[in-house]
Length: 466
Image (tube, rainbow, N blue to C red; front, side):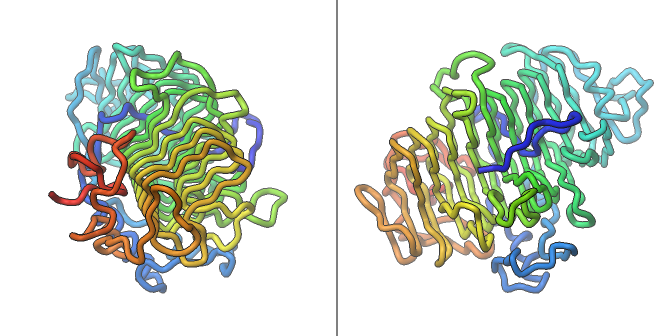
């Protein structure tokens, strides 16, 4: 649950969104590589490898290295295979906004390039750092509309992600836009050096927006989030070290106040997708305005969809949630959510949450399915939690640790057989009790690395080698 505030002076609520059609992009890289640097970094900062830090014991008036996110993993490469249907423009740090925008004469600023885009066009951004500034946002994409047949793509032009900075409340804002694809971007906050509440990528009053293969880190606000939007997909992103300093309480990936715009569900019956992401080290440290306990810092939250009577279905699959302050996957005042084949590891690190919750959590929710999820809870935290909810299904989940007595098709094991989770390696060891015990109903066809799930699927985000 997030603390709510109405937009004021153009400042939108600083949660962050999602966006990307299922299956279009996959990380296809091992999570061990993604998280190893992060966990090792925390260890070097003074704690044991993979150990939690307790925000209640901190002096929040000062920053220290333990809350910083790691450098971008080099293995998180960008897919550059695009099929533009319109014009292609280029941006480069060596460019000039008086140029024509061709590859040989690129623009200098992303915002200038965005201003040239029409349905079907593509903007390719070269490597380097881009400091964009449009008031409360860095890069603002507003009233930009593609079509289903002619989406607008804003993407990295090479395997090296362009680095975007700037903005007080959000680094990238997509507002009142549709059929937009953001691919291969890196947003960098300044939480390492100050307490700015800046979010990474925020989508507001928009539909059919995709955020894929991007690296969002070190901001004081949420990672990737949507507000009053629909048909949002968040695919194959890495979110690290976010949400520390925003008093409005944010999370790693968030769908907030979703609304019924942009037409009916896709052919598979879903409208929202959160697939193949890694979320690490999201935690609320700053207290909410007027409060004395934090509310969020979740890995993934589907939040207050009931406010606008949102009727769409949300698919959450193949994600890794590790060492976040709040819950793993949290559904609050929302309905019609399927969370399948995700790996939850040692979340709920914040000493005191307003509502405790669990690694898999549903509060005031309806019609939620938790299936084939691999859950390793902290010893003093719940593996699953429901409150004032109905129609919540737990099926074929595998738990290690205390707090959950499995029923029906659920399983418990003293050791779920992860390769080296404290080093960020969540692969299944040979003989793991997670192998071949999942339910195929709703399971993704491939795992986070793109390996096919054949026969009875394994539990968690990764399929064991056959």
